[in-house]
Image (tube, rainbow, N blue to C red; front, side, top):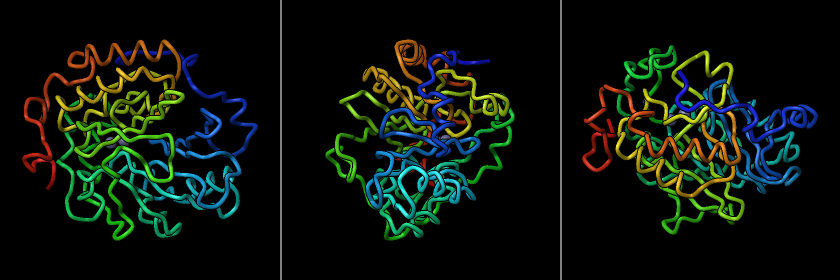
Length: 296
Ligand SMILES: [Zn+2]
Ligand SMILES: [Zn+2]
């Protein structure tokens, strides 16, 4: 069952133009595109043809997808064009899968929130997933998803406390914890573009069928991997209050326009009913950074 169904009119890309461009991405603004790697999205910020060190990658997909991520980067920015930085919304396995390989290949700094650092420097694992929530196959399989950290070593950098993002003028990072303690979203105020990570998503990630069809909907964070629901609610409220014009998330199609905003607002207002599972390991018993329970 969809949380808040939307239709494909709200999708922020034109499949026909995407196919004609042949760079394997969905373009959602002149300088923003994303590639869907099966179950997860990676986002490219920079103008087409920008060249070496003139663009930024957000998140790093699944293990084994480094080649696909690099292919789209070369098609979009030019042969051999390396990013200036990789920015991590959070460190779950489906966002860091190709990170070590890409960081080394491109010799590039990796930016993250300090509370996410332990998952990116090899020092702590995430709390166990909760396969009992959400009901779908992806949820039931979640006990097999890796929670152990990656280690990008000396390339890891902490995001500056003033909210700015190095190499991304005009963008700011927002701390949006709940799905992960150091989860961030990226916001560009000038045109109200939001890169939400998994703070909320636009497909029912618990269901393999919904993930395959990419039927658009407004959806809380993936349930099986969200250990702190009260924080997740505050984060969605903050993002809804921004009244974004366009959103791209870690999972599902990018969406835009007033219907999307209405759905995001409804998600924020009725979060407990719509997004939070009725019961689950972490419902009423959050795992948090403050008491150390978010780190194993
Ligand atoms: Zn996640
Ligand atoms: Zn994710």
